[in-house]
Amino acid sequence: MGSKRVGVIGGGITGLAAAWDLTQAGAAPVVLESAPRTGGVIVTERRDGFILEGGPDGFLATEQDVQGLAREVGIGDRLVDQLAKGSFVWTGTRLESLGTGEAAALLGIEGQAEGALSKGFRSFAGGMGEIVEAAVARLGATVRTGCGVASLRVVDRGYQARLTSGETVEFDGMICAGPAWVTARLVTGLGVQPARELEKVPYYPSLTVSLAYRTEDVGAQLEGTGFVSKPGVGGALRACTYASLKYPGRAPAGFLLLRAFLSPVEGDAATAAHAELSPILAISGAPAWTRVFHWGRGLPRYQPNHGVQVAAIREQLAAHPPLAIAGAGIDGTGVSACVASGRAAARAILQRLG
Image 1 (tube, rainbow, N blue to C red):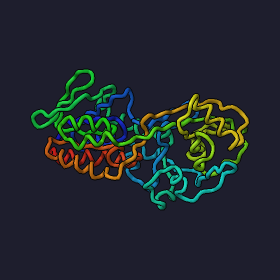
Image 2: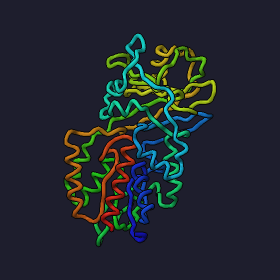
Image 3: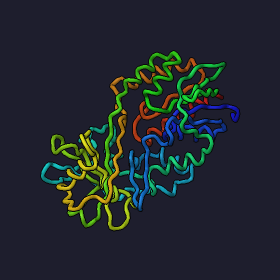
Image 4: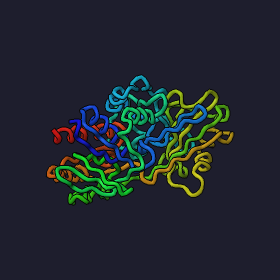
């Protein structure tokens, strides 16, 4: 198996999980990431004792995919449990307690069983970026950043990938683990017409603002993990997570770290977030600092026939040399779903390579 080269397009957690399993099985993966960094929407920044997230801040404690990968890459001891429990809704005049799953429902997040939500979430002591950093460190030179893939074509019993740099690389098998629209372009180029439907997978924009406050400047008694805004109430503020209360070590002593989720706004998002949070949480002072994260294409939402379309793509791919599709735009959103998708893709490729 050591002579079998497998190209993995996409250096997010899906592609890294796939590459890890391929390596463990004796294959020779090469991760091709177009961006200058790995991790995709998993972005953790650390500054002055704060740990802030630009993407997902954790995963359901009942889901074992991320935890299993963490143990394999040597950071199982870095897993941390959610501290605060419960959430609230801002009615426009006060914060009211919500039942399990009600916050997700108000935000339009579906597919989470109440039993799973009741067990809370987990993360890593240094933020979600730790799982990316550990995987990349273990994979080493296998991972190449700044390497976009312009096209694929079948050669002999494998594939030739033409990179955006003009370089060509040949592989015995491929895994497309990037965004759905990238997979659509590459796989349609191989003559698999059902893959064109992946271009229609909608990705919703995401706008979050992390704000650091001195503890004494926040007059409200913060309870639970945060709150969501009741639909039709207020302006752009959709929700707020009390990041430094949700997980340990997110802020130094004497400070609170909040994370606001906003609808698109005109002007400065940080100013808008502070203005809306101040009366709700009785904030009297300006934030020590703010950090805005904006994803033009954030979380994918599936159309009703998505599963049928993915099955049709995979059926036609069976007639091609080994190629698997994976990722949030294919098999499910959330960090755990992405890890599971990447590992399943690796198994499929390994089986076909024999």
